Length: 108
Image (cartoon, rainbow, N blue to C red; front, side):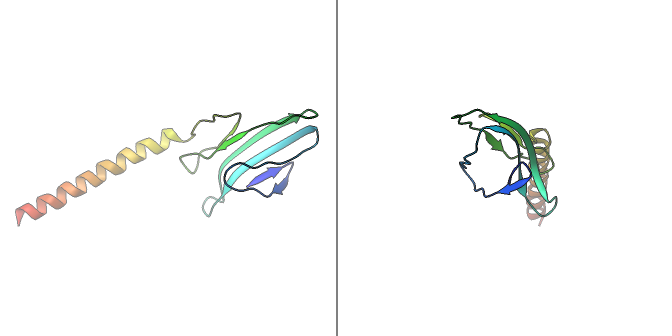
């Protein structure tokens, strides 16, 4: 979802070209979702000069409750601090579950 000066814009995954006259703009980007309703909100104030082209990159977070990143490319993956420990915990739990399953099979 791309919102420019409070007005939703048509956007798609990938590159979006939005022609604008010179001036100041407030750019807001987020991903619509169910719970929470907005994932990875990010805001940026931009100034456009005559005949100026500006490339900005939005990067959604790895963790749904983290902020997105918006600005000149390349942008970082926000939410790594929460996502990586949860992924490690999931791998450990699956490994323990597999070990318990194999121990039960071998004891029969």
